[in-house]
Image (spheres, rainbow, N blue to C red):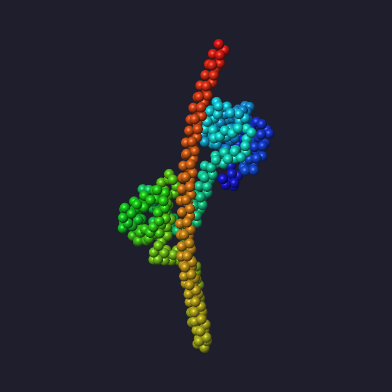
Length: 398
């Protein structure tokens, strides 16, 4: 288990023996930052109700005011699944049976073996740990998708084809605005040349949890054709939403989109430069009209030089735009590879989580079997006890 994760686990200990309590706290605080303590069940219940971030409860059975079993009963009224570990100096079959029926997580005898206790806590924290990891991965994915939103085409849809989201890039190339998204269906943007069987085969693969990758032909609102190299995956199990992360694949589309975006970003600067150049030319023309014939040739040379400088500045600006375009394409390809790698990583994590859920299910089934065996043994013990009593009575009679 990740040690930094264990530091975030909060534990509540209910123990009326001050020495035993101090030993537990001094040992566990090496692994856990936040530990609550109580000297009886009633105090522990009050602490639990005031601190809903408690992850595990460790309680002694025999305590004043409220014992461990009554504490477990009270907590189970509001939380059926919070891990609860019982510690006791002896085994009492009746108490053990009642604790099992109340879904106790573990039963540990005194003197407590700290290694055994830590192993129990580690197992009980496993589900929370994987939920924690899944949340972290989901946050990373969301942050990553957000960071590439300006260089990739992203849209989300449901299984019935309803479009639920388009980023600015998708709106730009498809021709639809944000207000129109809620009324759009996948059939509105997929090109009619794409066979229906091809689309259904792709959906079949995606619904199984696989990632579909490929080049697809689309059509814009203005009936303009564009191609996307797409990666499509299901957001998470149990959710009816799918995400497409894609890139334009034809040179014509890329050049058109890049040119449009760069012109929009630099139009203000370009207009300012154009205005300045025009003002300079106008001033030069006024100056030229005002000069006398004797200085005409020298003024004309100066004018030509200034105009040449203006043309050189314009040429330099065009070259810089060309270099920016090359850098942008290289960055686009790099981001595409990063996204594909990250999507694969998310898929691997999803498979691991499914495997862990299966192992948890088997563990619960084994616990149910142990519970049934314990109940059967309890019945046998009671029968033997009655039989011994009957034999004892017979002996006394004789």
